[in-house]
Amino acid sequence: MRRKCKDHIGKLPDDVLHTIVSLLSMRDAVRTSVLSHRWKNMYAYMSNLEFNWHDIISTPADSTPGTVCNSKVHYFLARLERFLACHLGTKVVSFKVSCCFGNTYGLHINDWISFAIRKGVENLDLAFTCDKPAERIDWRIIDYYHFPTQLLLHGEESKLRHLSLRSCTLQSDFFDRFSTLSTLVLCDVNLAGHVEPHMFSSCSNLECLTLQWCFGLERLCIGDSLHRLKVLVVSLCEGLKGIELSATNLTSFHYKGDDIELSFERVPNLGELYVMMKDTNVVSTFAQLEKELPHVKSMTVAKSRARYNR
Figure: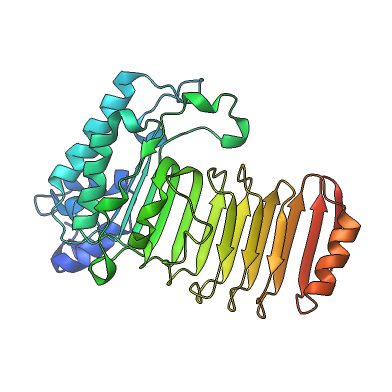
């Protein structure tokens, strides 16, 4: 006679089960709905939501970057929006979407962002292309999503702490909405409008800033207002001509791209410096930086295969 196993997990309080489900992947969380009547809607209380194009669409993305079959897009939208409509939790900690379409479906994407903000999202990660910028041939075909910065809440009303955006257009005059962020990652982002060198000055809580494949910014000035900034990464930003740093708590700075003017005014805590430029004279650049920044413990200057370290 087979002994009937007791369901000890099923006897746990709802809040404990919600925590357990939130530790699962989206797919596994949904699968728990068939366990019993009590588990039927448990996945709808997940606080960490992630919708990945490659997980939802079984077939590979179209071979031409920036183009995707409409039927795949509609299927992705239906799956994602069906889940959001069923969500019963009062809080979303993390909301991540990786998809292969942009501003053509902007109204749908706006609704996702509004949903996440209403739920007090802390980590918002949105990517609107599936290709790699380094392998992209024609950038003109990318349907850049116009990120609605105005949807973000002001000041203490906002719970947002980490924001990562890929392949979108961002109006630079709304950066005051980023004041609560501790981490900001912009990849393949078109900075539109009147782009000021001090555009990040209102982001006073930033600890880590990454700019990769961004365009529209000619000069970047990091001043005293970013007194919490510790890590700055600037990589392959087209049109950038100069960077001025006066950040007293900055500990790590990485730059990769065209030859530009680098100015270090006050960086007393800088301990790691990595600079890679296309046509720089490695020896003279290293000597100049070493003289200017004698307190930096780890310094690398590179050009293609040539490299100097200390």
